Length: 309
Image (cartoon, rainbow, N blue to C red; front, side):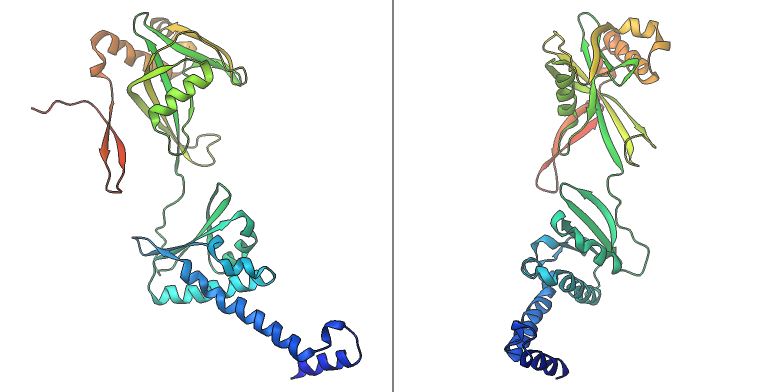
């Protein structure tokens, strides 16, 4: 009533043209505010349950937050609070919120309601909140990164392809780099060798992998480095000028004759390959097989070859 009285006074004194019909304006304002706030509970409607009893909400799918931009923050706060109450009643385990970059201004509001930052990638940020009373058991994001190298071996000449990185000239190493999301390990090895040296290669086997913690440049993740044995299909080297200073074929025996000039990993791989050249690669190779997954797709399994008797 007091608010209506103020509006009528302002209108009678012609202080502002929007107050010509204060009752109509007030009713319209209240109606629009009611629509935004009541429809904001739509977070409940767009939440999806996973097999761990957790709720996943893509905030970008909430059309009401998009249509009520002027009141988006208030609508989101109200919606999230109401939704959390309902999810607790349903004994949900946890909630995941995915924010597109266009709605990152809502992240501090979620943080005020107990959500923690989990990860950010590809134009979105994900937050999480554990709803149970015990300690959170939500998985951390990206504990490891995967690097892959190609031991490109010419078996006829017993030579291996080695490169000299433009930004690390101290030692020669195997060509390689980080695996892309969704990329198979063997495909990473073939791609990296081609990008750095121009050679076409064929995958033969996995030779080894190493795990290193506190890896510089891995943003706190551990590093898994896989060495693949590749066979060359072409032999003329064309180095990538932005990444490499040099690349050449080297005798594996020469690497072993000058161990002090090479890293322990390079020496170990060279010894392993010499064993394969001498006794057969079936003694050292790790094979890859493709098996059906319970998720209606397939996966790659790595193991030593075996014979069923």
